[in-house]
Image (cartoon, rainbow, N blue to C red; front, side, top):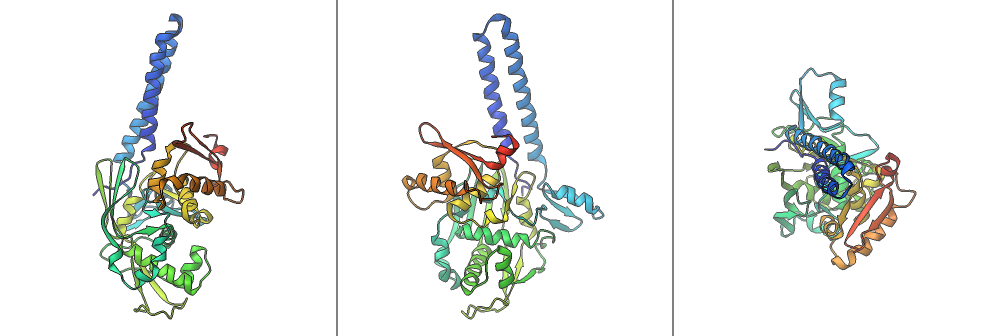
Length: 367
């Protein structure tokens, strides 16, 4: 089983630099003889940059997702490594560390159609609560970038499930994950869970959370990345203390959550993103875009059709561009957290691609 998700941004940048080096070398043939050496030197320098990036990408591929630390590792050692990735300290496995002001999820989830923008999934709440197995899918291939495949089985998931799962993981922000063979769990109540999500508790919220946790508890997936397979046999396990499916919901009802160590395989270096708490609660296409771009280091041109597929948008492609513009306009609102706010966006001349620039990138000078 693979133990990491290597960042592909370095490889893409190296490819771009290779092309630039080739173009620069070709340009040397068109300049004056006394300048050819200078231009060729520039091409060689660009090629060396590409070499360095490829070496860094190769190192990332060979670096395990879960860093191994000795059982007597100091708190400082643990914290330093957890800033980057999941760790194993003795027999305990921890997710990376992130601020209480954010929620963390694997990039594989945020850059795919796993948590789709469609609302029909949440509308089937009653069917899930009643145990309707006709809604289950098996071996469904989820839309991802071309350097990854994601095969999914279970109930299809939506943006609300993204928030619920991020909240489940937040219970493990400082606590170790459960060993696969252990019954250890985290105990909470529906009231506390709703509040931790950032929502008010209500019977409607109770039903929605319960249905979402059930959907997530059925989810199984297999990822293939850089010719390696990552198995996630279960996103989480749950026990409801009431033991039944009655409609007499109470906020004090307990739920016992288990997220096991297999999930840590998805939190390797450069393979996860912490999204601002306010932004992670956005729904629909706005929510998907905020989370999708939160995991990128800088702007890039992307085909609109690719975004359409990755977002799991359920309406026709011809409606997507208008919805995309509306969602991006909402993200340009000054009330949007700076780390998720969109400074500007632009379409290519043929209208087939889009380039989005986050406000945070502007402040770092990368846009």
